[in-house]
Every structure is written in C-alpha cells, then in structure tokens.
Image (cartoon, rainbow, N blue to C red; front, side):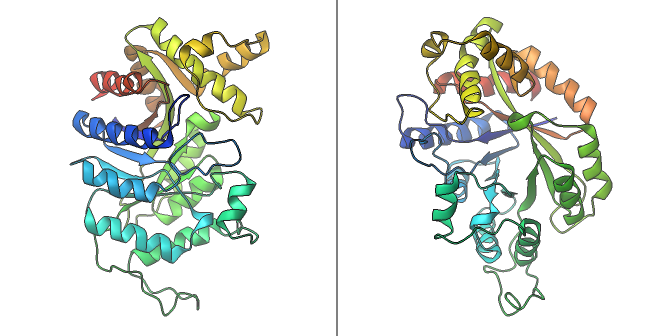
Length: 333
C-alpha cells in the first residue's frame, strides 16, 4: 500500500501563518526521506476571524516544495476549480511539470475552499460559476495535453509551455457522480474520508467500472485521505487527538477557530453529547498506537479496494505531527 501526505498548513494556537508554511516544508522533507509517495497541499481561503489554514495557494507551495525535495511527488489536493479558468490551470501545471517532470500532481476539487466572503472576493463580486466544474476540468485536461479545443473561447488558444511531461491528474470527490466522472475522464479518484466519513465500496467500484484509460492515467487509481493521530502509546495518542476532536466538533457547529493545545483541550468543558459525537467521529479521525492504525488501514484497503492512503494530521505540536508520519512509515513502508 502506498502511503502519502495531505497537508492544510494548519495555524495552531500560538503560531502564525509563516510558521505553518515552514512546518509544511519540514513535513515535505521528512516525507521525502521516509519514502512517502506524494504530498498534496489543500486550498483554503480565510474569512472574518477564520485564520486557520495557511494553504491558500497550493500551486505556489507545490513549486517551492518540489525544489526542496528529491523524490516525493508534489501536488494539490486540490486546487478549487471554480476560482480559475481552465487555461490558467493548464499553464500553471504545465509550468510546474516542465520544471519537475514526473513529480507533479494536478489534483482538483469542486468545493469553494472558503466562505461566501472569500468566494465573491475571488470572483471579483460576480456570481460564481458552480454548474460547469466537470466541463472546466475536462477543458483544463485537454489544454494540458496540448489539444486544441472546439469551443470558440479556446479554439485559437494554446496552453504554454507545450510538449512537457504530463502531470498526474486527480479529481477529489465524495459522491457517486464524481466517481463516474473521474473514471470517464481517465484520472485518479481521491476520496476525503476525513471530511465526511461516508466512503462506500459501491462508490469506488463505480469509478473502476467507468474508468477509461487516458494520457494522464493508464489504469484506475484511488487514494483515500484519513485524519490520523498516533503516538508511542494509546494514551498519548488520545491526549494529542483531543484538540482535533474539539476543532471538528466546533466546525460542524459553524464555529471555526485555531487548533488549541492538548492542555487547553483537556480542560475544555465537553457535554455528554459532545463526547458521544467525538466518539462517533472516530471513523473519520483514527486514533491509537501505530500498529493499531496500520492494521485499521490495511483492513480498510482490503475491504474497499483502494490503492493508496493519504494521511492528514493536525496535532498542535509540530514534533508530535512529524512523529505521526515517522511511526506510520515504520509500520507501513
């Protein structure tokens, strides 16, 4: 099973955005050394009082992180398509791939990656176009592949630089519709289990049944992203996991803040209902010692039939976060 990294560049309590981006660099370097297959940066835009993630320009981070590493694939998980034209997407990722052939991933999502204030600011006050995401992705893929599009808007336009190594292309999703579309377009399918925990074998099989080989991918490829907190002992893992549990709890209630310290989290007044919800969310957030986590991931791979696991871990301490990836590498790589 391939093991990979998904990072949001979290700005934890007491830290700044520049700290979060430096920590993303440290994580990329460590992942490269440990043999992780790929690392993706997410795209998040801040609204009022929601300065939680520093990864607002994942394509810029990808360029920087590729230059800081040697072997690990680097990409976006994902670029939020609604904010960009197909031509811009194509030229950005062709440029990245020209600089780092064979190491770039073009991962895209259909979500906004921010609140309404951010969405309208990114579209300069215009009504965002959300109805044509698959068509936009298809146009970007064709432009990346040096094709001339039939649409009049693009018919006389070429995406430069041309004749570069193609990046791998991936569609993020959590529904049967996105699975079918990813298969028909011949791209990889990435399922964010950490976001809603609703993965089913039917969705993944739907992708495989509809897959058509393309210039971007010869055979179906599925990765699944899990939120993970692990440590040398079960007790320590639980201690480090509590801030992320509370963050998720608050997020579902529309209260978005920075991830607190474990000490703050353990003094946070939780109701019995809160504790019940946190317990139910353990299908989204895997917590335990490394052997337990590795066994769970291997069992789920056998059950669902995916190819690769992407680990996202947002512990407050950077050293504890890096240790999550070290411990999982010892068990799975």
